[in-house]
Image (cartoon, rainbow, N blue to C red; front, side, top):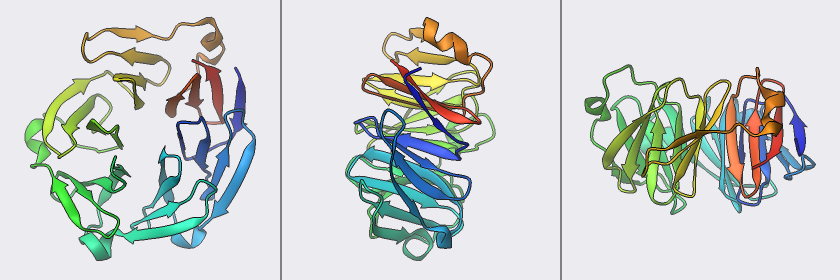
Length: 246
């Protein structure tokens, strides 16, 4: 292990430089470097429950406050830069998954209409999918969204990962048994079950489990979230975020 950030945390994200952004149980937002040193902290408890943080753009951090139905924007030192009220601008209240889009807007899943939608920061709707319930054969429970600039990925339950193009057109669905979280890296999918980490190549369908010696010490832990940046792998369990060479 290269380092650790002691928790617990509700959620975390990373930027391309290996900085770690977390949400604490008290809804504090904190930034750490890749060695686990705290750099900055902010608190907007007045906005209620912070449920998601997206640091894909290292200069602009997105935080979703579900209680207030707001997407709030921060700079890289967690200074407030603006917000989008999703109810006032889009008339949407039942959002379960949201993420930054490659062009600095945002994607969200509209659970009332079963559609993946994209909007700009002013709340103007830019594109949307068809009703995706037509493409699933199980209960739809959207949990996580990622836009990698080429495709948009929607984790719908514990087994299915739906793939869309950047216009919101459905492409295909990957099925991974009991997976908890994922990340797209160099055209591959890094994902975890509760106790293992895998790298999947969508082009060759090859799946490799990470069985390096340094990971043996974390067997038995339940992985809540996973991120991979540069030469580091970040694994969140109930007590901490462990930082490992990757």
